[in-house]
Image (cartoon, rainbow, N blue to C red; front, side, top):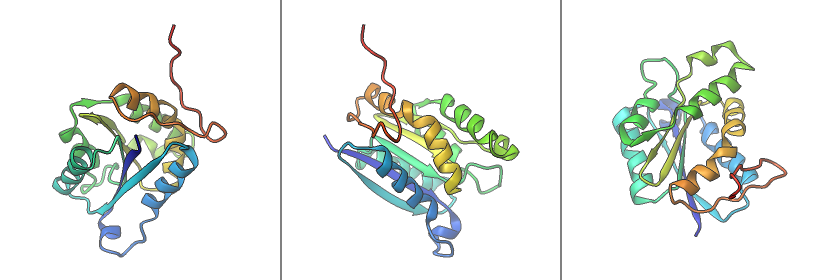
Length: 176
């Protein structure tokens, strides 16, 4: 089964064409390095509006059957930063360990990481992960959490994701 991965850049300015969509492209490039499984992606650039974020998450999870959705942007304390709220609104289960680990990793580089509100959750058979909007931080956060992603997708009945172990090694517990 081919994996379908959703990538959403949440940015008012990128959605209006004022800024180039660099964060979303950074996620695609990173996943191309990580994954050796057969996969394709669905892509969107949308404004920082909770209703639009929720609609896009639901469409990718329920209609496009993405096993994983990665968002970039909208995770800070600014008034228009509402990606975590949208994620929480559409998920049945929240996965706080993802955000905790991403903040710990980011704190190694910047003290403002404590302002980040990245989170993750599960909607039906889709894992949704919120990342920051800066490409350097995107890679640092994905490097930290991605070893757990394939096993999480296994547990929610998604496709088997195989990683390039020379780049990143997925962790799956051994059966006894």
